Image (cartoon, rainbow, N blue to C red):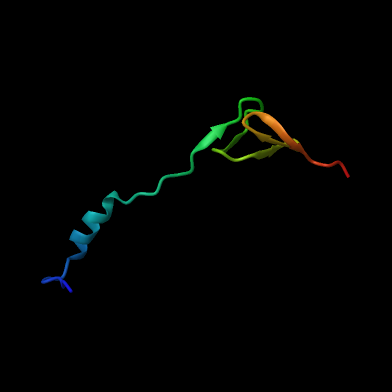
Length: 62
C-alpha cells in the first residue's frame, strides 16, 4: 500500500478543500398560486395540494 512520505500541512489540505461548497435548495414559484416550493415537489396552499400548477388533492373538511 502507498504511504505518504511527508505529512500534508493544514494549509495545503485546506487549500485543496476550498472548492467544496454547499449550495442551497433550488426554489420554484408556482404559476397559479405564486407560492415558493422545492422543484418536483407538491405543496399545500389554502387546503389544496398543488403540483405543476394544478390541484392534485384537497384536504377533507371535517
